[in-house]
Every structure is written in C-alpha cells, then in structure tokens.
Amino acid sequence: MDSYGNIYPLTNPLVLITSCFAVAGWIIAFVGACVAALHGIAWWIIIFELFFTVGVVVALGLGGFLPHRGMLLTLLAISFVYLTYIIPLIKADGTPGGRATMGGLIILIIMQGFWIFLLGISEESRLYPLFYGRNNVNIPNISSSIRPSNFQSSYSRNKENPLPSIGSSSPGEGEAGSYTTAKAMHTYRANPQDPSELSFSKNEELEIIDRNGNWWKARKQDGSVGIVPSNYFSSV
Image 1 (cartoon, rainbow, N blue to C red):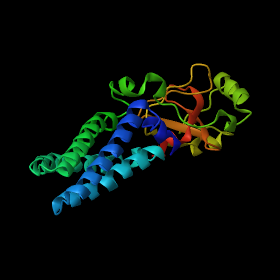
Image 2 (tube, rainbow, N blue to C red):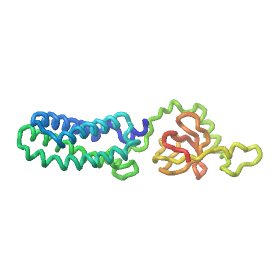
Image 3 (cartoon, one colour):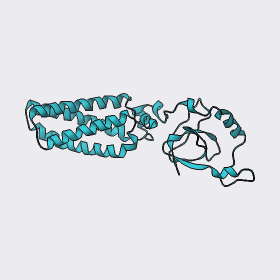
Image 4 (cartoon, helix red, strand yellow):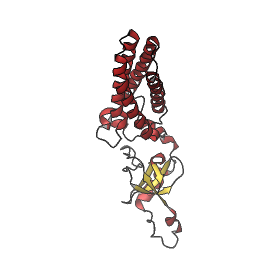
C-alpha cells in the first residue's frame, strides 16, 4: 500500500492544505449549527460531511486512497450535491449561527472542488505532474536495500545470455516454460541511475523470472531483463 501513498500523498502541499481547510470548514459549520440550533436535514448533511471528510483524510494519510478511489469519488460527488442543496437553505436562517454554518460549508465545498481535480486525476494524466510534481510520478516506496545482493551480476549474465522465451524450451531448459506472466497496474519509470531497473507502461505484460522479495526479476517482450517493483503487478 506504500506505493498508493506515493500516488496521492497527504504530504503534498495542495492535498495537505485543502484537507486542513476542509476540516476547519466542517468545525466552523458544526459550531454554527449548534449555536443556530439547526434541525432536520441540516444535521444529516453535517454528520455525513464529518464521516466523509475524516474518511478522505485518513485514507490519504494511510496511503489507502487509491484502492478505495472509486467509492470515495462517488461519495465526493454526493457530498458536493448535498452542500449545493443545503447552503441556500441555511442562508435563509439569517442568525449569526446560521451565517457561521453557511461560511463553514462554503469553505468545505470549495475544498471539495479542489479535491475533484487533485484526487480525480490519475497518474497517467498530463495534469498529474502539474499538481504533484514530476518527481512524484511512479516512485515506489520500496527500499533498495531489500533487493537481492547478487542481482547485479546475474543481470549482467542475463544480458549476455538471454533466457529462452516461453514455449521455446529445449532439452535441459525445462524450467523456461514455468515462468509466469504479470500485468502492470500502473506505469513505472526506472531510475536512470540504476541500470538494473525496468520501465513499463500500465497494462503491459511482463514475464516474471523470479518472484522472490519485493523486487521481481522480469523480462519484457523486447527481451530486456531487469527488476521491477512487485506491488505494481497483478497476476494474469
């Protein structure tokens, strides 16, 4: 789940600022609603906004937003509609508490408008680097210290003596047909300073040679061999 946190990090300034303002907006709305003694649907929406806002912030903080992205974006759309509906109704209250509630909800809906862009874009979008920076794209949070210590030498040997492809086994090469294929769930750009890493695109299928550890040894269709982060792949 660490890589998910890198895709939508709470440490990103825009994500962090909008999250803080959203929480502040809800607190203002809650206090105002208590002072104005609001009742009925206003309280349902305020409580809904509490669970939704806390849920988004917690998901971002724990790096779990991407697996639940579809559900949270759906709730975001519902929340936006709720706020658009309730703000004009509270405006008619006219009391200081009502005005405070309206102000807090306006802050909240503005922040949710930013969330639509910040959390609605995928890492393949051209807008993603604009909000998150190019250095944040496709950087898995996997320590290089856990890579196999003997990989570099084996990688060099594989380049000189490529392994046979699936289905072309010959006597003495019975294990070649045992390699499995995995599909990339996200795009990844290899570290230019590490020649052992492979770059790949979303939905690209790679032949997995060795599944040991968090970095797998894999081979692309063009025959190049290297290591890839295992949490970017799913079995085919």
